[in-house]
Image (cartoon, rainbow, N blue to C red; front, side):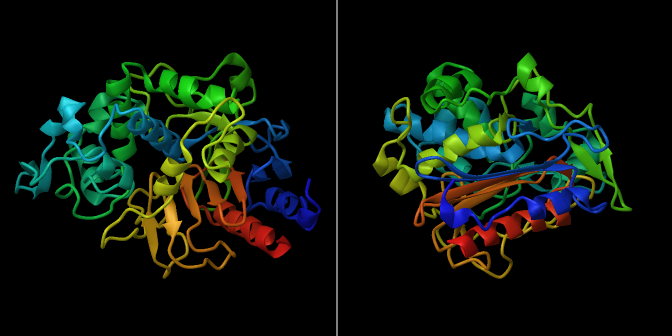
Length: 392
């Protein structure tokens, strides 16, 4: 461990897991370009279980999956298999069949029309293709409640074939874009997404604890997802495990991982694409991928419309933020100390990470709590990031 991070201790993590309004368990780690420089673990894998959280605990990664899928797509571009600006329907015809939702008629039926332009894979990576999520979109929530549209956590193709909320390319909206991007990768590779990731990303990086399907050993180390009740207590949901043989490997949310494994992925971005088992991305690709790609658009806050799944959420309200392939990008310094150009994102069960290529550090904070933007976990993460920059 580096001496300059000696001021970061486990004390705050322990307090957070011992507070009734805190978190059941947390793993928080920091890496530089060479390896892990801080590792903090506290609490239990399931509240009241007596089973301690450990550094190798397995977490449902949820949307921290997205950057891995984006990496797989960029590899396809490098190999000449994928043109980001070609219609995605060239590789995946069914995405060209989707229509735009123009509201609902008097009988509550969706009013649909053809989109004004084709969806491209670049739009998918940038979240400008027109897709949303039911927990952030009143229209999608209505499709689910009134028309039986399945949740994306079912791992089905039907869950993805929602109509678009606006014409492709017209604005930024967070949604199932990267699930579709994963299907594009599968189409050009001729393999399932999990196989693509294992061969091209996980094996070069030595990520042996990351997959769409849990091995027996991974399941033995699995943290339980919890629901925050209205009174602030935490209710374990041991049955909440993503489908283990899904119809679709969901590139937007389907992976399971450990914090040390995910740090190997983050470290690759600090090292310009270099990995122990061979280069994952070319340095020129990394340089292009980390730049904001929204032209005249910006990342907006997320309004939670299903309280059990998400609160209203936004990183650094009031500060402009861009989107890259596929991370949020800070356009101004953040209150935590994160500099301009730093990258980051999160996962639904309150997992958070950031990548600071300027200072050569990256961190990951992992809990398993719903709804998203849980005050205790999100606040604890921001305190962790702030402590890192104070130590610097």
